[in-house]
Length: 177
Image (cartoon, rainbow, N blue to C red; front, side, top):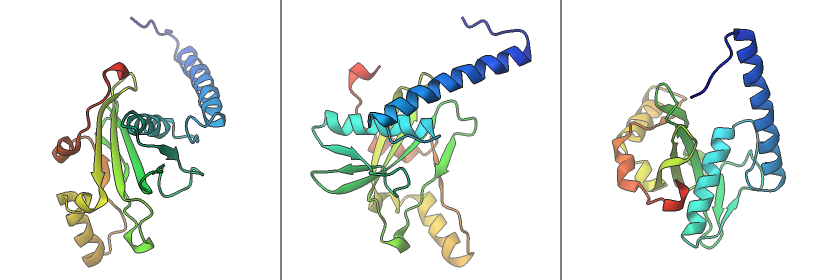
């Protein structure tokens, strides 16, 4: 059981110290090419697990050349481009970042991988959805209507409550936890 300091100041300083250590470790992971690396470590963790899953299927997966790329992983043997969205079970509202298909820009990705991380940041679910099928899901059909008829600028945010994710769920290697 964790014993936290009584003082709020001490607790906060301990949290900062742990965060600094984690950032240094993630920076080294980025330097070694294990993750793309930026301040979105949850995203980095999700990308790592997706890359590992593809490799476990004997599919060569390469991280995008730059973090600002519109896709996260290139599947070398098929030239498919994967956008990874990651959410943790810690998320209070069960939602993560927007999923932007970017169709008006020729869509730089054609597969969405959704990773749900357990509290210890191991993948508890991985769902892989082709873009064409993603766009037929109710949230995306409704969003398309709102974008065209009402001028809405936002896109659906990834949600661990989407029941249809189960249809695209992949079996994870037992060694992962």
